[in-house]
Length: 253
Image (cartoon, rainbow, N blue to C red; front, side, top):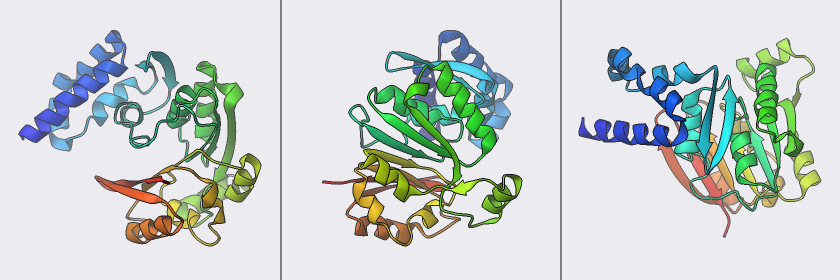
């Protein structure tokens, strides 16, 4: 009980740092309204939904704008630094964002690495439009390359459904990307199970990747085997379990 209260109080402080005061008041005012739901679910999701339409945050003295993005994702990326716990992006030149969703990490990377080109890949066309909007309103569109493609291939019912709804969609070719940029300073991967297929076959491309944050989904594959594969490619791997998923943080000496 005390541990949950401690985590909750820390989350309130974190959100207070991110949100402008009027938005923070709107977010926190839901605590009383949704108290029973918060206790039952042990999740702040119901509060996050109050900001989904449009909001701004302050991060490292920058004001960033978002629309149609779950604020819970913002808390994880900008508050808990879920993808960058081991690596600062300030000096990165080439960043690859696999599974960009609505562009939350894409914008994080563009804001953190002022010299970087960010190549974002997202399989769902509706999210591609959201990314374009969010990047444009933050004035970062000149440093973004955006592609609608599937990462890891058409390996399950969900990816097959994407192909049916968009017959022109292709599989992202990471070999071509690496050949174009030469060196990838940071790779972020969150592709809902596609990670287990991305890291199969010829993995020579990984030698050009300096560091990586990989979200894994245990219901889609074997994380232990994936960890061994990453280590076999010369990465120093730190693993962090997180509820029903986890993260691999991969660096090189």
